[in-house]
Length: 111
Image 1: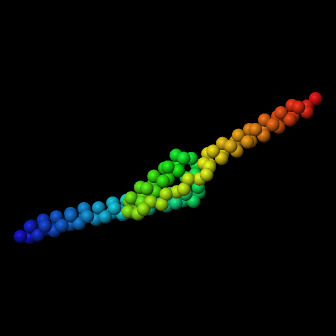
Image 2: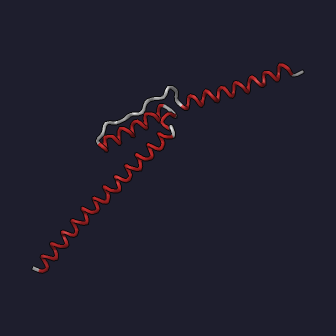
Image 3: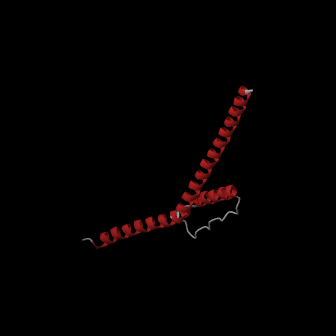
């Protein structure tokens, strides 16, 4: 009888450990999801989603995934009028153009 009680108690403790491990794993998962959400919000504040169409799609995909996890409607980002990569390319092109114009001016007036 005593051995049966100990065995039963041991089984209950083992079951409780398994349940506790499950809760701990769920808590760790929840913390990771929160980290992802916080990193997403931080990156959006920095405007990284406007770098390129690919990044924009990536961010909206993460928003969709988090909305599924939280069982909420996704609040997608709006696309910018112009992507940062395009703005940067135009600026670089403008700098090259000005440098070329300066060189041409120097060549015209040098004797």
